[in-house]
Amino acid sequence: MMTAERTMAKNLMVALHELPGVGWHTLQKAAAHQLWRDPQTLYKEQTWLDAGFQPAQARKSAERMLQLTNGAEHPNEKAKSIGATIVTPFDEVYPERLRQMPQPPWVLYAIGRLELLNRPSIAIVGTRNPTAYGRHTASLMARQLAERGLTIVSGLARGIDSQAHEAALHEAGGTIAVLASAVNCCYPSENRKLYSQIQEFGLLLSEAPIGAKLHPGMFPLRNRIIAGLTLGTLVVEAAQSSGSLITADQAVEMSREVFAIPGPINSPKSEGANELIGKGAKLVSRASHIIEEFPWLTAALDRDTAEKTAVSHRSAGNGELSRDELKVIELLQDKPMTMNELHQRTAFPFGHLSALLINLCIKRKIAEQPGSLYIVM
Image 1 (cartoon, rainbow, N blue to C red):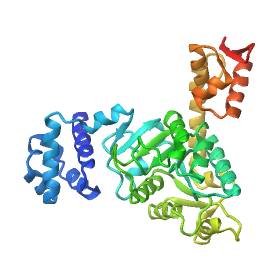
Image 2: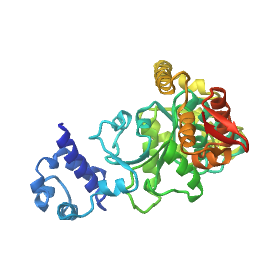
Image 3: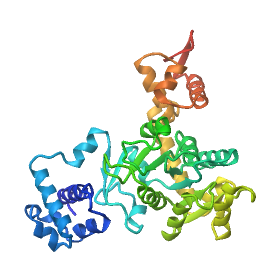
Image 4: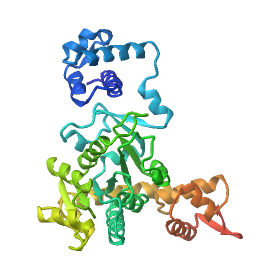
């Protein structure tokens, strides 16, 4: 498909995706008939009826095409206005793993680092009300996997999801938050700070049209994307009725791996994870248990690390600088700042920021002045 045709196909599918009452199977009909190839016929209801649309859908579709022709705001412009990128199967950046799943999303809205979409990734999911054991384990596993270069994918829910995102955010693999809500809407609202951090340093992803109102049916749709985007799903803590088990079931249906952290047999919040192990999920007690399940993964991650090191070395001149170190230097080039000011601008955890500042001082890239003011050397 030529570039111009790809653009027409994408624009058509996005416009249809945002029409109420037009679902996945209807979009499939439009794609199967390649309706974008004859734009002049799109204002006629009969075109849509011939493609298998229901009468109401055909009428809405023809009306929508006419509105766009007469100057109505296209969804692409709405996305640009909030800093989002629209990704469809007609784009090269669309993840290959999603193409392989049943009913892959026709349209995704993304804010942040698009390159994360095609990195090797693992989903980490679990209860919204974890125990101290669950919080610690989710953070530990997410950090170890992300340090190794795996991208951590979760759903931005409170509890295990949040722990996984926070732990992976500033590591090599980074993190993707797949939202049930529209990409410009943070749910739950208590995760606003984490949402903003992922927007800047990770990737926010949603199938919901911008401005769509959140409803319960959107959560299973989100879970299928989490399962489809990743090599496998790790369940940390989950009760028997936990929604995270839906993600695990969807991973099984897509022939993806399912992993589970064992928990105390007397803990209700570990019943779901323990039951998964009994049904064949792979028991995990350290990050290497997951990486070892994919024989090709170690070489791929090592190669990626080597390439990043080379790029970092070239950009840093005579000393290697990480992406986070470069971020600090970039901010200090504007003006000298204290550690508190840098924390406000970067949202890096204080421990991580302190380590960055010490390393940059050792590398003689920055210097600390009286009053704990940091400057670029």
